[in-house]
Length: 335
Image (tube, rainbow, N blue to C red):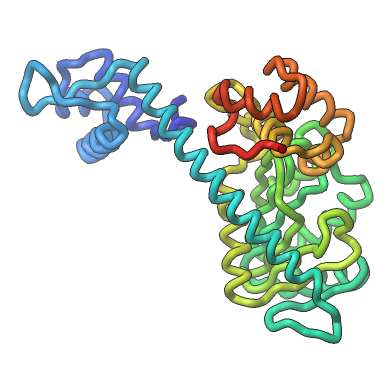
């Protein structure tokens, strides 16, 4: 129950038992919970590190569980701090990816750049992706920011993904949360998970990207037209940054079968991302593209959030979001 706040099942059992019977020591906990001594001691160490245990005021050398209201506030505060740090890392990686794309956009076929191959047109891109995935040895990691898939794209992807998984290739794919609302796409990614692929979703993705064997990455030059051109990255330094970006987003994303958790102030991940994009001055169309939803849906989300904040402009929404704790105090807002 408290796993979402960083508490494992055994530690939670020990914590609950100590709340119910404060006088119990290690031996009593072992007997009551039917757990090995090592597991109980490990749980006590975890609870102490999380500040959910305190020294007894009455008996020297004994520990007491802090009250649930204080304990839950401690766990929530820790999660908020970790989420804020995670968001900062994602933004830093996003900026690095944007810089990489900007640098690669000036490349021309006659002006090769070490570690970068330039592809022009959808045919070249698909041919190169086909050869890369066909030769994959261990792993394929993908950002899929297009939202709901068409029936044609789903049918085209099934044989390739089935072949990869049959060969034992590890596949991890991150989709947008919006795919959860499109049943054909949900059916497809559920099938993908049943075949052994791992699937998670997140409110927004920085770019489309495929990384093969941590040795080659394919990234579009322009986010507005991903079929126009792309770069194949093999330089170790750039690949390391892109792999770090993927791992960071993967850790923050939610497994498809899991309910997306709300923030401490009750916002869904998609709402939290929308208010951040609003505060940064993005238009409804830009927000829609980032979330993989229609402009109408993005407009509805933005209007609802502004109404809840009592804001009449996007700038005011950013200010009020900070005041209400929806955004960190340092979040940039539009001028």
